[in-house]
Image (cartoon, rainbow, N blue to C red):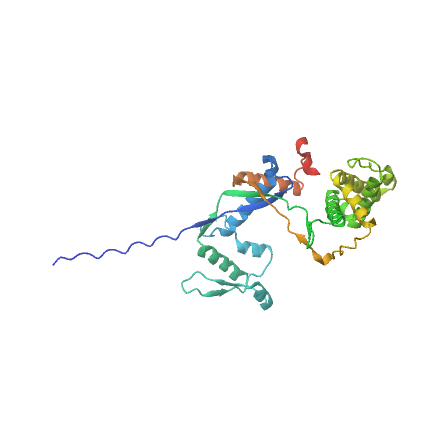
Length: 323
């Protein structure tokens, strides 16, 4: 009789490990990719995400960079064993499936439970970390809202002017210095825009000719005069960049003065619906996580924040960032 050994059990295959890939989306007014020097803030933002998420995913038993939740609770003086309120648990839905074979659920009743639930989730997803290749996707900014009528796809001049006015008001307020912006409101800018458009349409000049700011605005004193002057200067730039505004205003005046056609029924506002705007992908840029660059950048920012270094300006060819 010949005895043959039974075949050995094959070793269990290791579970596959996965990495998270970070991608961010930025919008641009121009349909072109930015220059390298103009991508710094986007790159630093994604690198910070990479650093924070990597620390969250790391196991305390395997990495010194793992986020120490207990140190956070201690620093913030939080009782990590104190139960959450029932209202909070119900609203947040704090129940997480564990990674054991019977699929039992873990109730997350306190900060310690939340920490354990996070570790279980990372283990169950077989995550090995965050991929060092980071991606920024650039898209065009959505087009200005257009109005679509049920009977006609042509928006009225009033609708166009309202849309342009909203855009200009937001742009002017955003352009103001931090010391002036709190004292400014939308009504001030709208009134200034109405006055400027009235001067533009009453002047018998080409549509590209815009009256210069009146020195009379600066005749006041203090912040009021500075604010009025800043608003008018910004309005001037906005109106000059929109030569079609004069035609829109004139068309609106013509529509207002013209008698309604007896054959057409005026279209009510409820019959107009906003037409969805479109945003298209321009392209993408990929780069590698760079710990040394990130640490240098964060240190420079904190040194300025804590008064350890003076502010730094920008090169002349990058002065447009300050506007």
